[in-house]
Length: 162
Image (cartoon, rainbow, N blue to C red; front, side):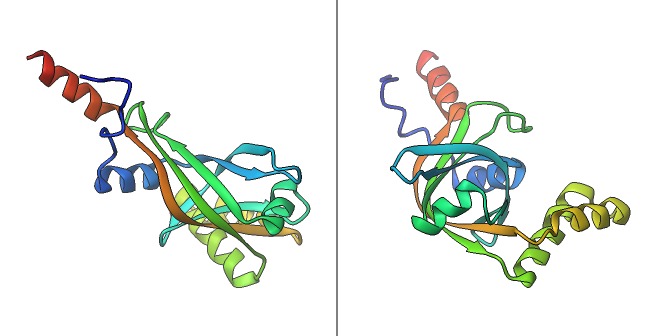
């Protein structure tokens, strides 16, 4: 078995969706003014085929995606019940949303995910999040450039040894 090329060990559609729904953090990557890639770990929501992330208007990442909307998102299975060695990398385009309906919809979905039916912390969190400069970064995936399933690799290795 050629372990230098692991491109055939990809996440199935079902496992990819499970990872996107289970993981809560991603690495969000954009280009600085001089073209240097910059990334930061951020919480995200996966909703209707888009990544949604909270930011503020004056942050460098927000200013950068207004200049150049091309971004990348990296997600791993670390810390999830799926176990390690699963990852996805997307290329996408980022839109900055600053309208109240988009922000309130994001806050509601995020607090539902974080607090369930516990309305007291939800209300406090929304009040804190709903600041004047808050924006939502909506990333539309354009292409998957990496999909890796370490479980599939381990299964193939075990089968080749049998």
